[in-house]
Amino acid sequence: MTDCGCEKAKAELEEYLHNELRGDDATDIREHLQHCEDCSSEHLIGVTLTEVMQRACKESAPEDLKNLVLAKIRTVQSAH
Ligand SMILES: [Zn+2]
Image (cartoon, rainbow, N blue to C red; front, top):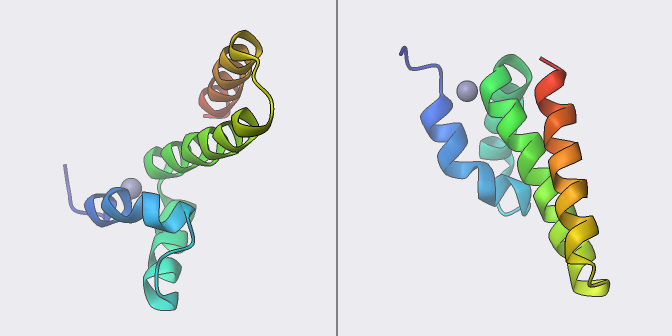
């Protein structure tokens, strides 16, 4: 596999999700995500999981939650 920045993007994805990156790094990741389907789908899944986890702190409905996550991931995957 050629180095298209995936390694950096994946390494920093979590910090990016939590808005913990400095401006330049965040810009690099954002640009990479726009051009890389692989990383952008990982990012979408990460965003989804983050949302779901936040929701899970407020409501506790494990079965619904599981279905929601699976549905979201399928949506992400079928978008490709
Ligand atoms: Zn990538």
